[in-house]
Structure formats: structure tokens, C-alpha cells
Image (tube, rainbow, N blue to C red; front, side, top):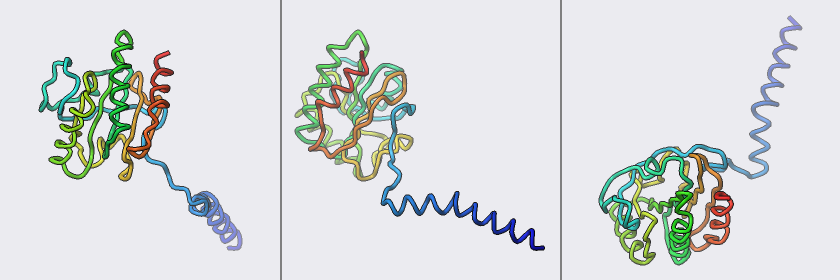
Length: 195
């Protein structure tokens, strides 16, 4: 009888060490799991409605499609935005230039609006097409408007998420406020991917 109580005590101690203690450590440190795709994660398919931009891609505004599927394993920059501003416009202009410069590498871009109200997103995207002057980057609204594609794990409070990917895997991720996009760093990561 004594032996089974020692065994039960030992089992309870192990349960505490492997289940409860690690949770307490995370809570004590105040850290929480970070959502979102990381380097090496696969990028999945998702559907969008094209609003404008990418004037020569044979997709008309209003078409519903999967740009991610069209791009295949080409190097790409995917932007998911709840808010936009001058930094977003600067980013699209730099992406347009990079796509043109790296035509032989088949660099692609995609700027996807996400948020609570699909009708408002469409209006915002239409205005953004004009203000950004996007020529090679499609401006779209996600089918999964609230948080973007579920398997991309975009945080509910993330204003802008930028995924740089090649061979269908994430190379780099940037998450920031719309007015804090570090365009130079994003473009540096794009150039590094293409080397």
C-alpha cells in the first residue's frame, strides 16, 4: 500500500513539473504566445476580390480569385492591412519598382485589406488604388475579411502584417502599426531573399 502512494505522489510531482510549472513560468514572465506565420512556415491559398492595381495581370476589378495560387512558388510580398497611411503608399510604390526590377525572378506582390466591414474595406481599397498609384501590385479585399486567411494567424490587433515568401514558405514577417512600417527593412528583406 505504501508503495502505490509513493508512486501516486511521484506521478503528481511529474505532472506539476511538466504541465503546471511551465505554464506558471510563462505567466510569471508576462509573455504570451505570438501568433502569426514565422520563417519556414508554409503559406496557404486564400481567395480575394480584386479592387485595382496590377493593371496588366489579366484580372479585372471585381474578379474573385486566389492570387496566392496564381503566384505559385514565386517570390512574393503579401501585405495584410487593417489601416493604411503614407507608409503603406510608400511600400506599394517600392514594391511596384522592385517587381519591375526583378521581373526575371518573377517577384510578385499583393496588398490585402482586412477588417470588420467588407463594404467599407472596398471603399478604402478603391481610394488606396488611387492614392498609391499601384501598377504591378494588386489591391484586394480578403474573402475572410475580419482577420484574413485563418491559417495565416494574423493577430486581431495587428494593423499591418507583411509576409515575405519564396518557394511557398515564409522568409520574413513584419507586424507593425500602419504609421510604423519600416519600408527600408522590408525592402532589404526582399532583396536578401532574391540574392
